[in-house]
Length: 616
Image (cartoon, rainbow, N blue to C red; front, side):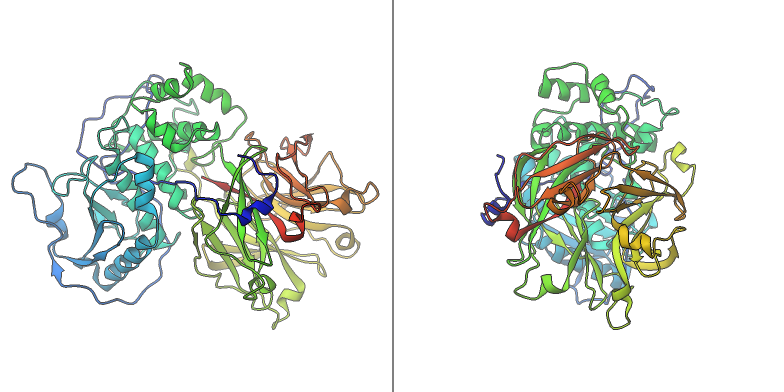
């Protein structure tokens, strides 16, 4: 229910149930031939699913239990097993309270055992297994996890696999094989391993439901479920929606009345269709639990059960009008993050467009009691469920990543700093994170162009804007934006935030002149060249009283039309207002959120809006 003030975050609100899943190979089947326009369903992959790549740091080995065979080869069945490929394996531990026993293949050495121990610890501290129980409505059973070099890989690129949609440890889905991740350099290795695990576990939970784990419906559901537990960008290299979008020269084939087998990578287009469909239904207000309960024999059947309509594909294509597919979720949903700098609590308003549908706390806070809020300042909340923090004194920069249950994980801090001792932080201020898409053509053959990430800094004295080019938390290099704003420009204009306002895949920089009320953004290309300046059609000036009453909070696509919008907060009245943009600088409308946080109820004296986060 909508709340009238963010002050109600002081009450205890239960975490929303979250479940993740990703699918891997089950029994091999023959792929039916899918035509471009008659397929309709979702698909999973009976071969090892290729999942995201993860960043890895060398770790020291820990003590492990005695070497034991991973599992006994089934003698009473004719099923084919991979156990003999991964013998001997070492039992690492049980991730209590989850009924999950973890083994590491001895051929991985100390690095494999250390990764497995970190996985056990992380899983024991997570809610993954309970999330699955909640979503699928069953208790599940004990499973065995084997961390192995699938297809000889140790970077997570070989994904994960299991043998059936059940919990049979002998010839079924109760034995999960996860590709080791310690040689991946794009994401946190333990978080990637947890995502692979939740993907496979979700398919075991699917059981005999319509969501078959080795077909496109189960595969699509499991990939979406896995993203719930994965930090920002963990699955970037696993996207299937773009494969569907660019299949047959952007023809958007319909896989709505057909369920594809997934023992062939050619059917990842069907999986991509399923992923987009499920995310679309979520954007319409249907929970994952209700989507699963409605059945998934085909997407059309699921849509008919949920809506009573028989026009699933046509309705989805209408919803995608003018919305680019750059990720697995072209229909992102927003939360508005708030911080109470005194108590340290950080919470969110969970939004359905302008309606505040609920609230939630994060598992960590940052308040004045321990000195956190005096030292660490939030920079931005752009991206999927993350907050970027800066400590001007120490120069450290770090990210909080959190899942839909509000559980926070903290990856390593950036290995580049800008501190007070060197004089850096007195000159340079962070603007926000930036992303760019280098020119490439691989998207046309089913592989998305790689994205590059960084952090923009501004020096008001020199007028320079510098980009730290990052790979995760690792600093790679820096470069300067081609234009500067110093002297009289710096006195009048302030950089506010970064966002992709023109939908070219590259972040732009928004500037604000409080005197005139003008807002305009530098349109950047992937090399940092300013291609031009686009001014907004609306203003917020001092003369009108707007600049003194309203504060720009953040930017995100607030109405699902594919364009970045701006959110403003009036701390006196408590109103929060979106400026809906069209991608060309025009403000089309200014709807307000259903709840307020103002002075009369004391809310705005304690709570500060940090900005929108988008969750997958």
